Amino acid sequence: MPAPGAVDSLRAVGLRWYLGVGRAVLGHPALWPTALGQLWRLRRSDWWQRPPFLPLPGAGYLRFRMVTAYGESTRSPDPADVVRYLEWCRRWPGAD
Image (cartoon, rainbow, N blue to C red; front, side, top):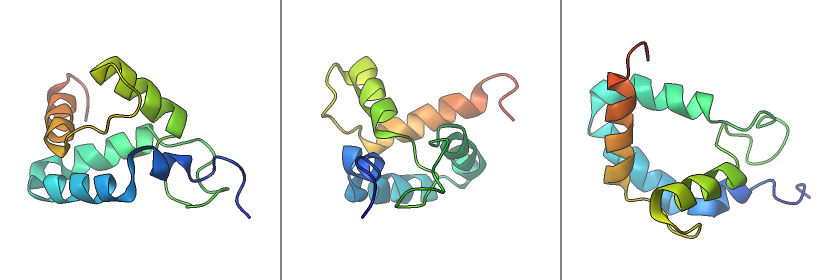
């Protein structure tokens, strides 16, 4: 049985959300390296020790970001917002 909260990262926004973001980013090949870099930077430090064994951000971090971006922790961002965020990251000086 997984540790409590082990799959919270996936549940925080939902598998459908991750798939929607994946589809949105696939449409922007120039953002692929940035997306992979951001996913790696934001991953839980113990991602390989708990299911789902993917380098995803922690649920607490996702809730914090939703509150700071949208004012509520239960909102999932629109995939277009994630694309805009990745474009901003790509333009950031020294990001690559």
